[in-house]
Image (cartoon, rainbow, N blue to C red; front, side, top):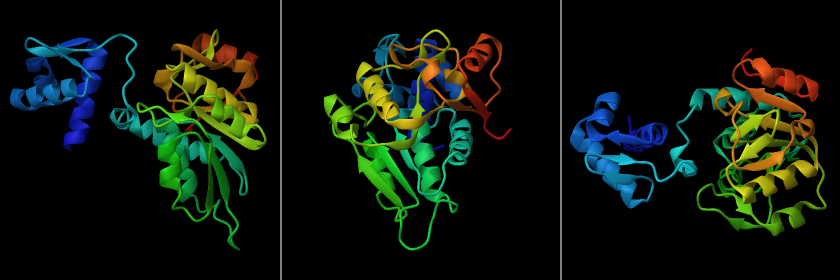
Length: 263
């Protein structure tokens, strides 16, 4: 386990439990109390947790983890989802991507796809994104054309937000938009934690022929602060496990196709 992976696990554990002791974290992760103490001090210096006597606590119930600390979460599921999303893309398509760890994996899968790699120097796929990390990583892929929206970056997620996102998308027509979300329910539809990112995602979806939500099972049945769009605006949900219960019925009623990665 690398130091970054351990920090990810420590931060995720504190976030899930709310308040933890050094001994509890050490026992759970199988590391020394001295290592946990150093990790908690580092996370506190970065204002990611609050140090308490003998442990640490989350900063607040609505706190958003920075993108670099989300990468290890549900990693296998996100890889499988990304591969399934690529199967929805045809050579020459234009694809809108918002920011997040799942859409970052989708971008990587698009860039690695031999099926989308044409001859003759033409772009195999055009990616339009408001995520600076996706644009940077995909810019070296010869068969991928990258278009970046305008906007002001959020340090938490590397996403561009604000009115420039919509104004730069106004004259585009995308084949499909692939959206990562923080929650998906029948009542509120697709949601995320930040209102600026919700608006940016909504603008990407507005110029797309089809709207795909790429979300692992932990996001389903969960509602977060800002709505992106209702279920009726979605065409496809790509997830990593069968959807059951009320949400399955609500997706069917809204005409949303459900694709289970690996099924």
